[in-house]
Length: 184
Image 1 (cartoon, rainbow, N blue to C red):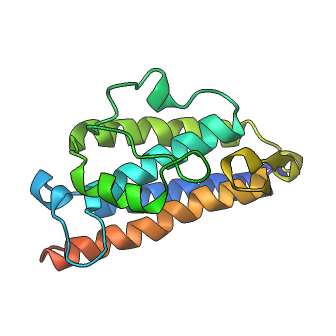
Image 2 (cartoon, rainbow, N blue to C red; image 1 turned 180 degrees about the vertical axis):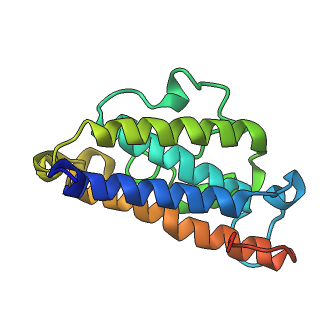
């Protein structure tokens, strides 16, 4: 194993690959009805949660880290598999109450959304493969988005955690509908 294989970037690539695989395993067998089911209380439908994971990762990695337009605004514009994109967080964005309203009204085309998610995962891995460990320490000023100061590593950590956190929500939402949540 080379030094590159033992790098922090290699470890991040492995973590993203495993998180994406576990998420997709959790999404396996989800029907349109299950994706749109609105749970009682404040939880959001699992289809909206899945869309949030893919769109957020695309925005973070393509937009904030690569400095290019996200896939949802370029080659995947109008093909993401959602009736409307989620509202932006932070200053200038709609914030949490509007996000919850979006999550309850958005319509999901699950096969299209899953294809988009796969493309996002590939783009994320290609970006990660382009990094060195030193790149992880590069500072990012996200004050304009209300997110303050970060590094590439901290933003990647947020993107990875987002996949993992919401995968748990999706598993729970499946369980509440009487089907198996996690794939194991």
